[in-house]
Every structure is written in structure tokens, then in C-alpha cells.
Image (tube, rainbow, N blue to C red; front, side, top):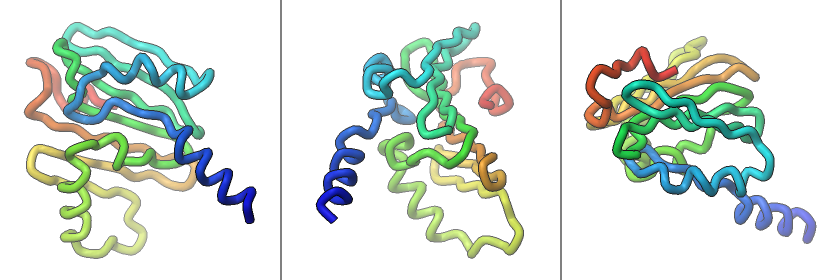
Length: 149
């Protein structure tokens, strides 16, 4: 039992810190240290930069505008990421909208939540889950939802 408690505490304090939607990318540089060897790369596009890393079998991409503000997050992999960590200040609105939606239809594998400026879409099937979250009011000029993959 003591080993279980110790492991739970260790995982709590060892969890990576992510840049959050609507926040700045300042914390992404420290993610590579926290993730201890997990792949991390940056890809530059004309209107935005994508910071990509993996953890726990899931690939996460954070899209930042020229001012360093994260306007979108996308993921794919074995599991959905911890949205409370990735959505930041948007998470409360997300949870409220999730509770307000009718129950999931049998066989449905896709979910879309609209909460104020936030859109969260996720779906897939076991071991192949994907999704994205974004605030379209933060999108750089010329960037569309199709660019978030």
C-alpha cells in the first residue's frame, strides 16, 4: 500500500507542465526537461509555429501565433491528454458545456463542444484517439481550422 501511495505522489509531482490554450509558449522550453527524453520539435510556418512533443504514447501539438500565444492544440495517440492541463482558463467553460450536452449516442465516436470562444473536438477508437481544441479569435490572419491537425 505504501508503494502505491508513493507512486501516486511521484506521478503527481512528475507530471509535465504544458503551455495552455490562450497562454504563452514560455513554458514549452522547460517541457523537454520535464519530459526526460521524449521527442520535442518545433516547426515554423508562415503565420504560426507548432511545438510538438510526445508523452505516454500521445503526440501533442501546440500552435502559437507570432506573439507566442497558443491558439490551438491538437493530439493523436493512445489516449486523450489531460485537458485540464492543456485548456487552462478555458477548462471550466469546457466542463460546464460537457455537462450541459445530452448523453452520448450509442456508437458515437466523435464529440464536439462549443463554449464561448472555445471549440474542443475529439474522437477515434481504442489506441487511435485524436482531437483538437482552439480559440478561433486568437488565430493569425489567414489560418483556418483546417490548418490544425
